[in-house]
Length: 336
Ligand code: TYM
Image (tube, rainbow, N blue to C red):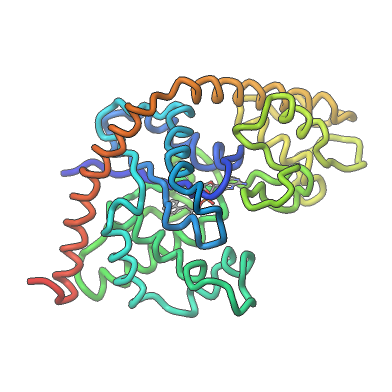
């Protein structure tokens, strides 16, 4: 029996931020440290996803490697057996599986995806890639029979679609795919009660996002520590003059409390306080500490080691992906 797989991906389309770190990187890194040997860990860069919205293609290749460097700086113990780091486009089966799954996916279910509606829905010149990319994401997961997929709240709809398409294929063609766990069970496995959504510091009604044009409310992992501190101290709050955890009434304050708890602090130390300054200070101290450690480790990452690791992983994962693809091709009558 092969080990159960934990898998996640981070697009290479801009600088990584604290939302990516807390939503996807940290759960994966923590699990990889705690459960070494029990699971297979797949961390990959969905580089084919990166240009569903316009990017600077001159930077793409390096940015894909940068994401791998970032994971290692975040503490992913890549020297350990069964931890794999790879780039999606280097494993051809992702593209072919996507085409196959596309033919069994419905226009209606893609149209309902909120990410598509938010990013481009309604415009005639929105790319077909943006529309159908949840199918590529499903292929990323199903090719490796991944059961556990740590993602932020914004990706949960895509995870549910992955379960739907896997179930549809299984019921029509026999047992082809392992279903990733339902979203609620994923949260339980990663020790959370809900999906994570770190908000923008300037406008806490929206999520912290790489595609934000100004970047003022976004804590980038490569920001200088004093820039981080300044952004946190200037975070939008409210005039209620009492700290409480209520995302509807106090979205800014609640976002700071979320960051605080994820970085090991306690909400109880601040709930009921009249001033917001001490909370901001504490959050700034913790984030700066994290960023300084992260940046120091990033400086130590050895590129030769990384490239070697990536090549070995890409070779090993190509074999797994190819054999799953072959199984599906057989079931569909493409191979005998
Ligand atoms: P991407 O690259 O936009 O984001 C990477 C991960 O970071 C999480 N995230 C957040 N979490 C909390 N708060 C935020 N503000 C925040 N912003 C981003 C995202 O939920 C995600 O987990 N389609 C995916 C990448 C992908 C993937 C996959 C993930 C492609 N194939 C297969 C898992 C499995 C994406 O665009 O994530």
